[in-house]
Length: 125
Image (cartoon, rainbow, N blue to C red; front, side, top):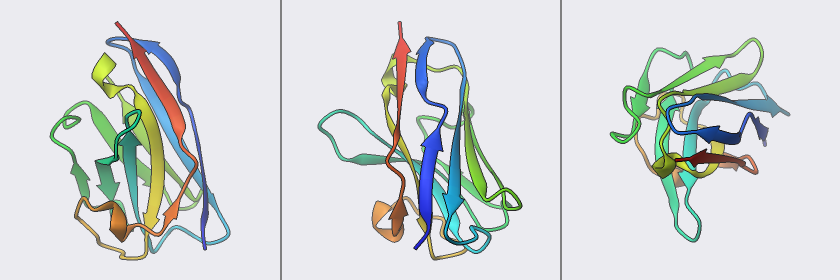
């Protein structure tokens, strides 16, 4: 089992940027598809973005397309989510997740077997 720890969340004004990181331990991430999901208070997790094992394929939710960028550094066992042009609707707990499917391109959280604890992102208006 891979352990995931997110960092980089915080409070930012609308229009601002944040970069989230997800550091893994226990296993190398190089064969996993990695994903970011977010959860609004009292609601189910929502797909944000995924990146395949090599970084050559990414997938984004329509709500973040053009504003968020997912990337990975397999040498550092770390995945990133660069978020720009943030708005209050982006306020949520953001979690990273690992899927054992190397080239998963879907949006289902059930495909991901390892999860981090999450990091809070709050965007003020």
